Image 1 (cartoon, rainbow, N blue to C red):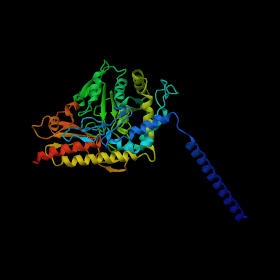
Image 2: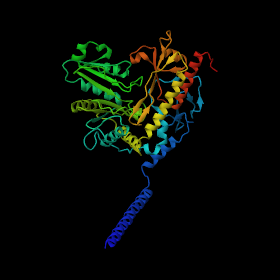
Image 3: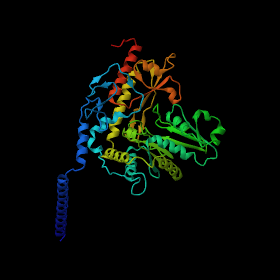
Length: 460
């Protein structure tokens, strides 16, 4: 009897397995047939144009764009620094290496390798309304995917936080100052610790009103009564721009409010010792995916009233951000999350780590120049101790007579950003490591020549 029951159960399981497999095979067949039989219509021309422009050869030293330069009715290449000609095949060896801007073009090859998963085609009638279906200005799908990418990167806690999108981190920084300075008994002093990102000072001064003003460096708040009794809004960039070190707020007191700018707190630029969990945190698409031109950033905000006040600022100034930019951002984040979601971080860390090691090897041969020290730290994302891979080199001219390091480097055909912009002496210069491979290689070439001259070797 027991054997008969066992045989019956086995037979039942076998029939269920066969039926389930037939179901999947049938559905896969019909789905595949439907996709194959479905022909492109209105999107065909747009897709063909995009593919045609993307296939234009620029010899690996530039890119052609649909909205780019047109010669004889055809798009032509826009060349990287020091390259020219219609196909970017002409190199100017005496050209200056431009290490001034933070353009994150180092990720361009990654997106070329992921062309299919990152591409998005927009219809002429896409999101013509001012709002989404729920009368908001933000795609709920984009918010959900941003929360997921933080979970993968292990760099921020999003649970219990409001998410607010803005036109890059730039707008969100201004919105945060606006929100945190409301309903105060006296004007707030806005401060940051040197060296700090110049935009904090420029933007705060530009929008200065009776509720807040920029009061320079946190070191000026040394008076204990000032620390405990004054309204203070402190910008904290962590990792810091320009030196890449992790930072904490230094202002103290019950009336101190802090804005954490975590633009570079991603596994490719910094170790992630623990997920960030501050009250106001700012992130940007430009340093996650490299798409600075899309102008999308977001804030993670703990307090509902601060969220509402920041949202009011965004709504009044912009009525939300471009729906096309949101759609592109959504597609990019989806592409990141394909598979285990770690590909972009592995790729970017490997490249930035290589660049830092190459720069460090050159500077180690010099007594005239030095760069910042960033200690190895345990990273929760990589689950091991990892070395530095900062976005910028914070270069110092060590010779007493080199009081303007930017001019010293400029004489060697290297363009950087002077220290005084970051509220320190001009003995310091920030050099960007974020740009294209061409830009980085040219920077290393010119820097090697400077160091060689210092050691008595004449350039060839």
